Amino acid sequence: MNKKEILKILKNLAVKRAPSGLENARGEIFKQELEHFLQNKDIPVNIDTLGNVYIKLEGLNPKKSIAVYAHLDEIGGTIRKINKSGTLEFSKRGGYEGRWIVSREIQILNKDNKWIKGVIEGRSVHSVPQDLRNKEKIEAHEQKIFIGARDINEVKNLYKVHVGAPFVFSGSFGLLNPEFDDDIIAGYSLDNLVAVTCLILLTEKIINNLSNEEGKLQKDYNLYIVGTTREEIGTEGALFFSRHINIDHVIAIDIGIVADFSGSVNSDIKLRGGPVITWQELIGTGVFDFESCKKLAIIAEKNHISFQDGIFEYYGSDAGKTQKWLGIPSILVGIPTMYSHNVPEISTLSGIENAAELVYQYLREL
Image (cartoon, rainbow, N blue to C red; front, side, top):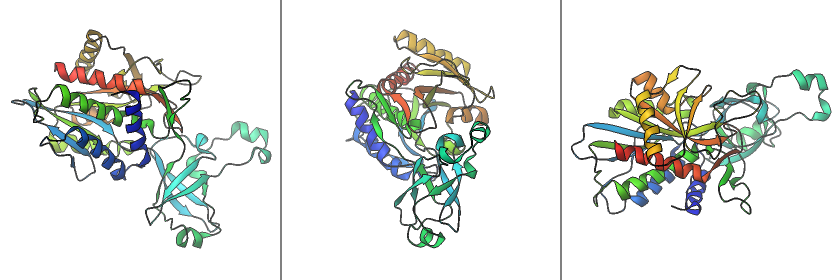
């Protein structure tokens, strides 16, 4: 699959927004992309009770079940209070800092399932003393959203926004500078659109190379390809699926943190350095299966796939929770991404492609 095709999939997924717990619209696009590779094969695309979208590729005399996860949801917020003045207060939906969302454009899903535009209020530099600018920490729960309403009645009756309504962050999406570079992408929700796209590429590779004409996997394990839900609010989808299906080994695809700047704690991951084999997360409380990580590195070297070793201190994933809470041997492959949980995030099309190749080679040799 070439870069134009990869970018097209990314954009198709990005059009449908997916705040945690409301991933169904994006999940439907993911489902359609999978069905494209499954034509003339008796392999249904399923959706479970928590919204996880998945397929099962049955192996030959399977001895275990392996799942590959990428989460569908994105960060955002939830309307917590409607003020008499018509401004809105909110709670976070997923993790981010209050300082970067000042004056940020958002979209709120109203009662009619329409996306209403809004702006998180930002105080003018012309009205804030210098000493206050220097010392004040901005918290998300202290901020307000302006949508143009003159009072609480307009919010409820004209804009039809209610307490509990979700919102997501707005922005442009696509190649950063297409006239100079056909690889670097910029946009909202790259965490985890890059991984969901990678999962689609991986599925194509598996169907074309590891399956017979009927779609039967030519391996001694069953393989589940899963777009998971609710990762940003506690990896609920992956935990539910792993328990329900009795998974024996988990491979999660997510972002790899590129954060080599002042004040960051990082593993010196480079944007174009190759997929990240993640050995540990969550300040040392999330330790991945060592032998599986080592095998992944060996396979990368054997197949001449450039890769990076990483540890992410302030980061949790589907794989981390299945390893820690369920005792399932789990690994995490990261696609290098800058400015995560900001808008825009930055990643690369080649990063998506290389991560798909690494996971494919790993599955091929198991």
